[in-house]
Amino acid sequence: MTWKLVVFVSAIAVINVAVVIEFVRRRKLGENFALLWIGVGLLGIVLSVARPLIDNVANDIGVRYGPTLIFTGAILFLLFVCMNLSMHISRLTERSEILAEEITFLRNRLDGEPRV
Amino acid sequence: MLVIIPALNEAETVGRVIADVIAALRADVVVVDDGSTDATARVARAAGAQVLSHPFNLGVGGAIRTGMRYASRQGYSRVVQIDADGQHLPSEAARLLAQLDDQQADLVIGSRFAEGYARTSAGYEVSTLRRLSMRLLSRLVSRRSETHISDTTSGFRAFGPAAIEVLAPIYPSAYLSDTVETLLIAGDRGLRVVEISVAMRERLGGTPSSGHFRSLFHLTRVILVVLLHRVRRPVMQRGVQ
Image (cartoon, rainbow over all chains, first blue to last red; front, top):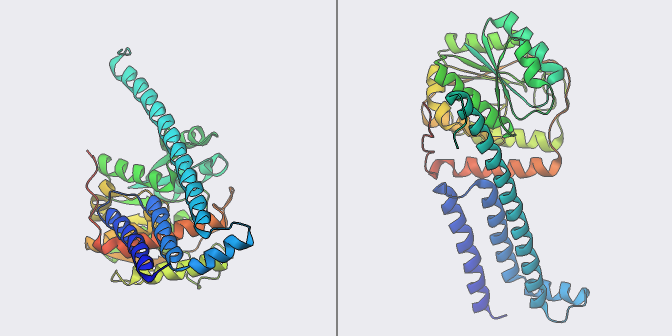
């Protein structure tokens, strides 16, 4: 990998981290998710300068072309994130149903009879 | 005066804690039942407390926030926060309250680490990771406030009227933020914070919370919060009243 490419990839990773921190600063992004994405950015910085390391690891586990290892890792990671977000959505859905129920009961108590 | 007791499945101990508090402080007691699946709410009501039950678990910070908003809506001018597991002594709560008046403080913290970070004042040994994090948080937070605070995560606190007014609408509910971040907000708004060391007893029942990985995650999270606090936008007031 040429040094230009290293600079380019690290720049993207640095921007990633900066954008995440800016979103946290504006309170658009919760700190829990922020930690995840900062972690991703930092990993990106490491990977951008660690081509020899990647090639070695790829060789050791029998992958002929280093970058495929990164692609595979990235795809698996994104899959994991999707699963995780799906789980969050499921939980939020369940909670909003519970809240709707609770409000229904409260309304019933206030009005004397439930509204449709 | 209002005593807030956050409780999650503490049916074993909460009754005794409430009885002790009422006997010692003659205060109103509100138990915030954070989605318990045992008899916590029933026991608490029978012991003479108001009970606010969350429809699902929001975490201890969420429970304190509910309690603080309740205090603010009902017009209480002083609030004490006490754990339901019996570690916090009502007699020590009286000392916290005395500090509010004597020191003209707005927020009084009861510190568990009077004799260093090796053991809490209840006699529990503190793990190395926890000890290091307590030190680090103490240093980071104390740098931003006028007084040195050794126990930034103590859940044994007394709030005066100014602290209730400032904190109730924007109380952070995330784990560790409910204790650590409130100190930073208190600093921003010019609240006077005082820390005193308190005696504690062993918990009457229940188990201490969370494993290593989770602790490390929450610690990293709260450090991020502390480091970014200065430059972050303040939280908007969320619908109170």
